Image (cartoon, rainbow over the protein chains, first blue to last red):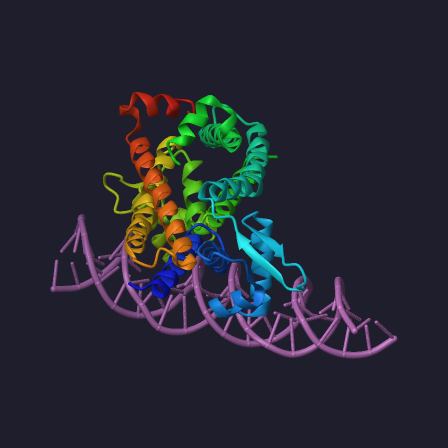
Length: 168
Length: 168
DNA sequence: ATAAACTTTCAAAAAGTTTTGAAAGTTGAA
DNA sequence: TTCAACTTTCAAAACTTTTTGAAAGTTTAT
């Protein structure tokens, strides 16, 4: 396999994987493109490389900035905006974990907390089953939340810090 | 909030969350329904409770069985099939992790392995960046794969087993 | 102030995904 | 074997998400 073909395959694979994880395919493709590109690219170049429209490219680049995965780069004397991706895979994983925690885990914990407050007849099997499931899920989610929080601040903790190094 | 409303909210929340993680919304809703229902339900009852069609109910129940999240129950003297969910949250998480590993991580590792083989000019910045990203992602994915494997067999390992207990 | 260079917006279109429901298939009892 | 009970299939319809591209907006140099 030659480099250009391999690049394309990488971009496609990343895009496909992302959509299986509820992340917009184009967003992942643009990210993949910037990941394997040494220099920063303009909106125009991204449009060109991936054959997508200006609107799509612009929105996607903005979203990626919102996720903290890419950054704008301004070149002196030029009006154009250039974009480049942080190439450190561990930073990327941290950033994604951080964002999803904020966007999904936090709202989930809120709802589960409310549902845990629902009162009912302790002898009603329906209530008992409902309550147990909600309580269990809530417990696990809170643990996941705490663990994520610790891991995002990982290097500080000798314990998680050393586990974390096993993954590098 | 009363129990019926709370049940509905649980089902909806679970469904919404699932779709943010690339899992079919109805599948998660049916799973949520069975999670908070003490007895096993028939296809008919699932259709009724969630106002979905027979075809959808049937396919979704089959998918859930494929994911190892629910089981069929045959009642003696009856032709109808009843379905119930494993209520142990940790089993559910394990099952989901196991399936996604098989469906996504394994194919990803295959592609990354191929892409890592691509040869090129070590002085070409394009090749260097491509190769570094692919290698780094591959390394991290392999680690994740190994870690998952260990955690899925967790209780056996004193090390991961004790970390694992912190989440229970 | 004007114009060129560039970015953003958003309604409509396209693409992708999920759901429906009627028909076909299967199974077991009589 | 036939029938009723039940399950499965799948093409078409409904729904959701993503993409397009032209128009509007912004910024900077002259």
